[in-house]
Amino acid sequence: MSRFPEMFSLAGKVAIVTGSNRGLGQGIAIALAEAGADLFGVCHSGAAPETRQAVEALGRRYVDHAADLADTAVVPALFAAALGEYGKIDILVNNAGIIRRHDAIEFPESEWDEVMNTNLKTVFLMCQAAARQFLAQKTGGKIINVASMLSFQGGIRVPSYTAAKSGVKGITMALANEWARLGINVNAIAPGYMATDNTAALRSDGQRSADILARIPANRWGTPADMGGAAVFLASRASDYVNGFTLAVDGGWLGR
Image (tube, rainbow, N blue to C red; front, top):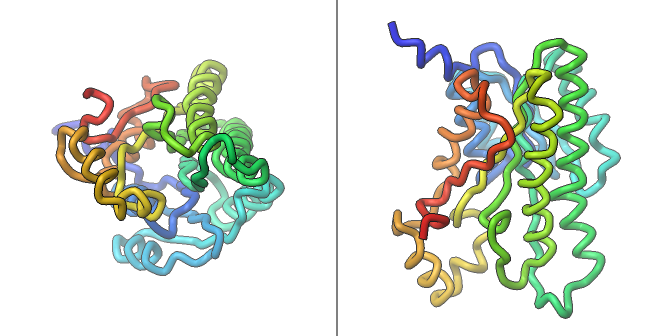
């Protein structure tokens, strides 16, 4: 009998997924549930009815939690709530993020801070809290950060987003260097150009959209479902010897 179904199984696992109410976070949450995990979903509104319905239809449990991840003070309460519901945590997916667009010369400091807090500072503190819990449980665990094509490239009119996502790639490596020996796998997924709310402005600009599609060998925008396989791999035993890596799910964008 093949060992691969067992290696990719998340049966009995509990996953925290931020930004689980829509887009990439929703796609990841549903994929983890398909592999057998129960979900603790975090979003600003605290309500993710579509995600809940999809997860529960798979026979898995879904718990909502409201948190403004621009405020780093929410992290301890978030983990306390997850532990109160499930008693343990096995997987953390740091997906939630925001983007602000301005010419760099005019970029507002307040929006710089908002993006950096949500997309990088809170991500680090979430990783730290998860690692502490994994050590307390003596179980090890899996941390998956959502990076970006702009972890590799500069972008246009998004300096704070580029800085934050470059930082996500960097701390993914740094934390793996310290925690791999403890049985904690820290990796990242860098989605390419995905059809989500964050890219609505790009997709509505005919010329920009055409320019982007011309560079993607797969010749299409990605979808949240495209993230599922990578997320399950990095959350499962199949990735036990994968540490500090940022996996591009980009339709071949970086290969051009």
